[in-house]
Length: 496
Image (cartoon, rainbow, N blue to C red; front, side, top):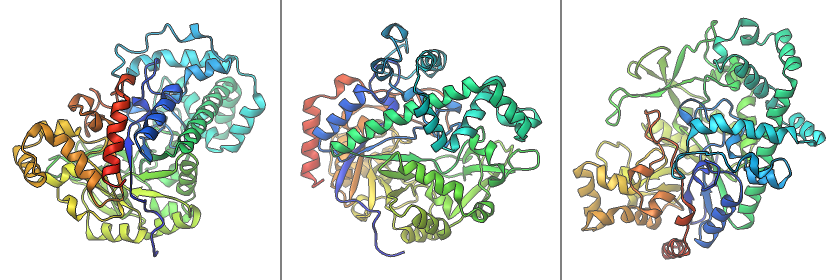
């Protein structure tokens, strides 16, 4: 491939998950507060809004462990919009205590309280023609709805624990489920229809305000998902349907035992025999939702780390070849308009760098890593190439203020020497300015860093489950005109 149609003009944006938006119902949604957020980005001179995956959350409430790579998260459906559509009364949702605090998402309460409200809305829905058209046009929906219905009937057990007729998708067993649970299947169709309708309207609103949306697609899918259950031949599974090996990354100075993610690995030979149809459909579906796509764990396309299923840590895993340039070519042929950001962080080899160069996708630069002796990558800001996307830190890093407080003294000293900053308390804004003034054409700043928030506002700590992961929420009062003007001023100052 030659040239670069995947890059960006010099510009800036903000990273904030939909779940972190303000709302009165326990979690961010696609309603009025989301439009106010888009208005704020417009006033602040921002061209991009980067979010995390919109999929239903699964194990550990992580958006990267979902029951489906194609379905939308029901929690993001705005209840006020359903009220405006005549599908809910205010009494159906206004008096429910959705969380203990508007600072945190309470997933346990959402799991208990949200579905009964959505079922009420479904009971009043009468546009059967629209719903039928939606489910007919989204062929992934049948497998997803069957999966969710069976999973509920099986006490939420994973498909690997179902009786063989259902686990093996025997036609008679599936037909019986369709007949006995037709109304539940229709309910899931209603949920996905409302999700699609509300998100499409919000994205159109953002685009009209000059804000493009950067979505996020995990390279791997969850083992406990409709994707694996419906496509076992595309994954490295044994005859017992259990994985042979699973995903992760090797030990390094950040994690002495490595990281054991546990996702099933693709059978890339089987994918190739099927012309990568599953992957190309996934990409086309994603580009129907977003303007730009961040492709997680890009290095796994060159080679991936395989860990024996059942291992307790990532030690003993091995690197194995991925699809390489063939995957890039397939994407170019089937989704030629695709704009992709390659998440090329982690252990990089010369082969990975060559694949990134071949793709012409912009890679990612993390300012925090520039001053960390444990990070083998070259992240010193003056070396950033224009065809890249820079962040002070991502959703997996501490906030700039948290890093400035908690990083090793040698890292802090290095950062202060590099920036010329003399007071440690000024370092968080220094990291933001380093990103904004860098050569990278696109700078994405987490909203917590614009606000100067510490570690309690961190979105996720890798290799941990629970705690405050994925729970932080933005208060509406934080979006002040003064902050918008400050952000706009900094953005103009650095030519973005």
